[in-house]
Image (cartoon, helix red, strand yellow):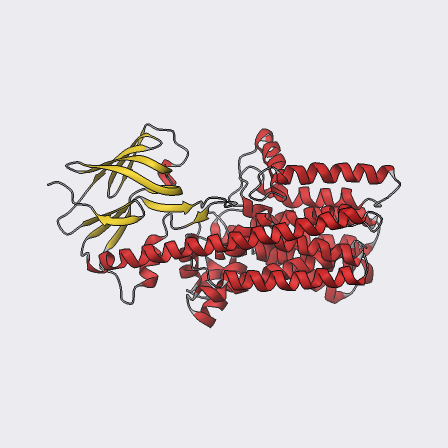
Length: 509
């Protein structure tokens, strides 16, 4: 690839950054954003002495680096969503640049490295991480994880104290951003093997420093949360294998579900063909596969799209190395088409996130008068969890159990009402249900467009079952039929979602 191609890639990267920053600036807070930003606003001491959920001594996740970054945004702009979203896009751009930098450490051609960075920047699997504010956990984890890999390279080459201190600092910040970073020592060991540097003192010393930092991180987690690790899945070779295969298929997926599989299979075929033609990669593909596997391993058993953010860096490096070949210009052209297509998809997904946030804000505005005037408990029923517009790559989060925080943060004065979230509906389009009032509550049956989603007590259960809450009981008969009995007082009010609107429901006396 010549200078013109390199310039074209850089212009594409600048255009993609401007597009995503503009789209993201118009997205509001969604779902978990409300609760986590409210927790982050409590300050530095709170961030360092509590878990991700604001709990102490109860296990879970410990991510003070992310919470402190939210607190910095809060000091700049309060709860104004634009500052948080633009910050996310800026971190995402930084991660893409580190993909380029890491590629150069592996002596990958400059143009190929830029191609990998651009592919990483527009990969559709990243939409949850970049357009959802709480996705910053993955962004910061990847930023510091990749920085640690690069600094480790620099330390092996030069043995400078600055590089070693930077490696230690980035390791700390990676561990304090997300638990997935615990695979960092394994990734560094893979780099030592790739460079054949086991006998060199800098390689052994750098790896030892990171291992010591990891042990210190476990100790701090234990002191704060009472556990060494949080959120680790049960050990199951079958589940891990299934998630590993699913992850490889998902990396390149878009709204065309089979595209990721086709990309992996096609790239493997091209690689085999190139090897037959004498095009040698000097072990890079195998090193990248090992790094991908190491970074993905902590997510196996509880796989979500956002867990693929860090491992996808190595996936993009492998794909670009295979496709961007000077001797095969047709592959370079196809790679450019893929980049353009992915750019369109991720831009469209951003507009879907905008639409979801507008739906969210409309819901808050509609419920606010009820929340401000109810003196007892405001029962909010059928709260939409997510919205999947036609043609979307994935569901867009709305509220789940975050509506209480959303109303409190948007209200100019303290709310009188106690907010009770009764049950969820996971939206898959236009939603409508049949409502039958009873003496103590109501019966619901979904007519179209969604299914009931039960968190906490009802998670993973198969109907029929009952869930007892402080405010009453939910009895699920099927996945689309249930009854609700409420412990109501005269000053309470019931608001129920149906056919795109929240309406007050009168309960029989």
